[in-house]
Length: 71
Image 1 (cartoon, rainbow, N blue to C red):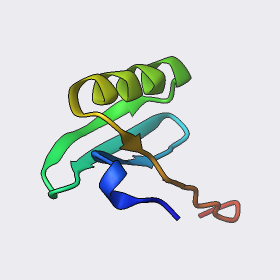
Image 2 (cartoon, helix red, strand yellow):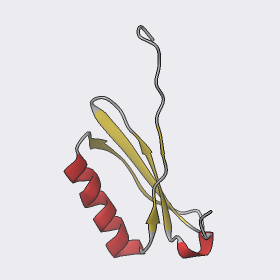
Image 3 (cartoon, rainbow, N blue to C red):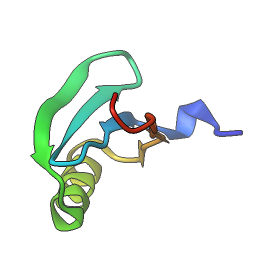
C-alpha cells in the first residue's frame, strides 16, 4: 500500500492505439496537467520527468481495457 503523504502528484494515463491521454492531479486535488500525448515512450518519460521536477513524487497507476474485436 502506498503512503499517500509521500505522493505529490497522481498521474492517470489512458493508453490508446494512436494517442494517449494524461491527467495529473496534485494531492490537494488541483489538476496540474491534462493533455493528449502521442503514443510514445520517450514522450511519456519526458512528461514523468517534467512532473517530478515541478511537483515532486509522482505515482501513475495505469488501467488497460481490452475489448473483443469489433467493438
